[in-house]
Length: 279
Image (cartoon, rainbow, N blue to C red; front, side, top):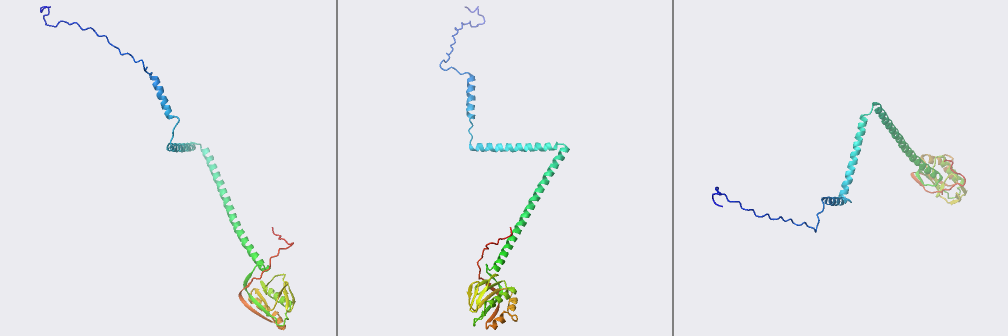
């Protein structure tokens, strides 16, 4: 080819090299790829396996219980609020009926309170009465014991000492002295260590006198509890005990005491037939 045929000086077209064939990498036949659906199933299973069975610690359990209690309290409060709203929406007749029921219940409670107060007062009074009765019973027992000679006694009184050098004092003279003392208000009497009671007896003649079967010897010593101002004059009246003893050549000395003790005791005897008639 010459320059005349290519006046612009362009380079003649060169033939393109032949196209090389493309090579495709062979597919891996050893590990076939898993479909996406299989991967999702495997993840869900792992999630469930992590959630169940639940593994709770002690702190988580306590928090769960507290949350449950809080929810229960909120539910009760909401329900109570709903009841209040129900009352606000009730009719006037229903409200009047509910108010009457509340008044009746209040009245019943007041009546029950009054009944219990009355029972308490009754019990207190009964307790006081029982205590007073117990005190009176003990005092009565003490008084009866003094009269029966089963308990010791002390108080103001006198002593009467009879000397009998000639052994002329008889048992009836000593018994007369006992009778005069009792008539003057003697409450407890003891003669030579023998307690004188209602059934006491004297026996024997001068020098051989017995009191309730027990022999006593002169001087005869009387311990008497009573009012001294009454006991002493009763023995010294004209023609009384002291003058009678002096006629028998015996002497009688009376002394007053502000406090004298009578401690000779008689055994308490149980009656064979008599029984108390009180319930």
